[in-house]
Structures are given as C-alpha cells and as structure tokens.
Length: 385
Ligand SMILES: [Zn+2]
Image (cartoon, rainbow, N blue to C red):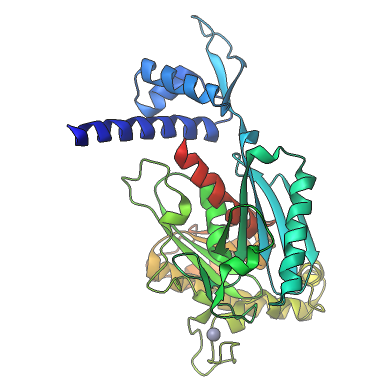
C-alpha cells in the first residue's frame, strides 16, 4: 500500500515536472495543447497549471485566436522567477554570466584576472561575484546560487579539484573557490559545463559529444536513455568515467612521437588542435587570427593543417561514439564559415559513408561554460517543481 502511495506521488511529480518543462520550452502554449502533447487528461493539466500559476512559475498572457470555440488562454513560463550566476575561471580571465529559467545568457562580463591559488585571488573572486549579483538588479530571494566552471577535473563528490594543469593546482578543496561567496556554490569542469548549456535546450533522447577547442582541448560525453521521459539534470546524464576523466580528448594520441604536449607525452591532439596554436600566430589573439585569415596566406596554411588534424580527431570520435560531435570552445565560436570544409575533410576519413552532418556547431558562443555551470542550479530547481 505504502509503495503504491509513494508511486502515485512520484507520478504526480513527474506530471507536474513534464507540464512545467513543456511550457518552459514553448514560448506560448494552451492547456489543450499540453494535454495533447503529454497524453494527459484535461483535469490533470488544469490542476498542474493552476499550481504552477500559484507558484508564480507560469503566467497567463492573453488568448489565442479562436478557431471556432472558446478562445484558449496563452500560457508562458515566468523565466525570471529564479536566476543563477555562472563564473568561468581560466588561467587569465574570469567570466560571469547571468541566467534564469530561460537557460539563456541574460547578462555577461569578462575580465582579465590571472589565476593564483592564494587568498587574495579568492577574496577578489568573492567581491566580483557579489558585485555582479548586485548588477543583475534581480531580487536576491529569487537567486539560486553560483556555478563555477574550471578547466580541471572535479571529483565525483564535487569536493576536490583533483587536477588542473591550466590552473597549476592538484588536490585543492573546491570550497577554497567559494570561501568568500555567501551563497550556494557548485564547481563543474568547463567542458562538462558547456555541454550542459548545449543540452539544456535539447531534451530529445540522444547522445552527443562536445569537443572543446579552447586553450586546452577537452570534451564531454552526454548520454540519455530513450526511456528518460522525466527532465533529469543534464549533469546526471554525463558519462564521467571511473575518475571523472572521461572526455579528455586532448590527450588522445594523434601522431605517435609527434609534437610534445604540455602533459609530457608526444603527439597528443592538444598539440595540434588547441586554440593557442592558432592564436600564437596573431600575438595570442584568436579573434585577430580569424580576422586576418582571409587575407594572410601564412595563416591559411596554418588553418589548413589545423583543419586536417581536427578532421582526424573528429572522425575518431565519430568512430568511437557513433554520435553527433559538437565543435565548441574558443575555436568553435569562430567555426561557422568553415564547418562545411571540416565536414568534407572528415567525410573522406569516414569508414561508413560520406555523411558528415553529425559534425555540428555549438549554440552558445559566449560564456558557454559559465552558463552551463549556473544551469546546474536552475536544473536542480526544476527538479523540485
Ligand atoms: Zn597530452
């Protein structure tokens, strides 16, 4: 009996969650449309919508044009009902991004601030976080917390940065990063965070690989079973591996005995596909490299080699995972004009045919990692609806 009651409560929770998520994902929807899309009875939909309106998570916004009968009311999600802030920490910069239940970047800032594992850095990080929270102008009682993205490996329990070559730390307690932040904080690996941003808006069952081409090359693996009808947080659907070191695509060997990698080995993907490799030809500025690319034959030669190497790595990911590969990171945000070129090169390497439409571009070109880190709070909140 108790088990049956528990499962009824669970069914109710899943229904409410599904109703909320559908309204969140559609800009405008009516109650009959919700009933049809989810296969729920009208009384169930009415009850759930009333509860969501009561909690200020859903609003009525006028009526749809009548198609004969009574005009149906337009329902929209109140995206501003909760918000969170993401902080992206890199070797030399701190990025900040505001998001809410829309899952979009509503405001962002990026400033130069070289990382150092010392108290004054963390104190300043806390001051920046507080100043940005104030700048959002949103009510603090609707604030869920800060999500911090770092270029390093975070232990499964979220308590320790086991290793970060980029920041030059190992075995550091995560709490050091939020010692001076008096709000809930959670740390996430930067590539995993970027994957969360990509997948938040994509609830359909699928698997995907995020290939992060920033100053260091990394990635993330998303996998979702077809029976995942509930909107579980994206983070829970990432494949993390035995030591949370999955997706370290930068250290797959591309050429044995090739160019030295910062990890100490030879011929890693990172040595051929990092953003630094391109930026290094334009005084460290990746934007400059791409703006000069059209008119500079030397840059074109570098880019040509880069695309060849990238195509090999991307094709290997396709062979290993048989999944879409999302090109992200710093280079990913400049890739749009060159996507079909990369697809052509990769298709020539593909054992199973010419189709290279599995190679996709990241949707978020600005502060993707900060956004995804913040979305962990947003998704945890949606779970409670
Ligand atoms: Zn390496």
